[in-house]
Length: 81
Image: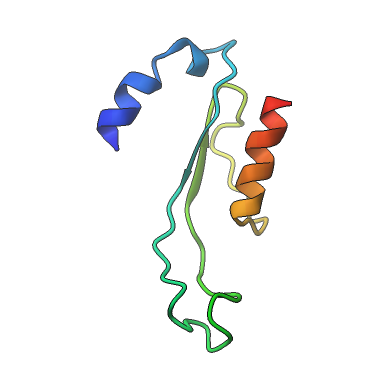
């Protein structure tokens, strides 16, 4: 991952005044497993690290609000207007 982030983050999009937003969603769940005892693919998994990087993002913010892939799509769509 470092080989991709190293040239990307110094770009003008991620500097003060830029409008870049990078979402890194780390999900290694296997939805073929009934991991929570319920139906496959329903309410499975635990906490997943999600990093949102950009000049307009509050630093050191930890948000315990439940999120899913739709939330990431909504965030990126709203940032594009």
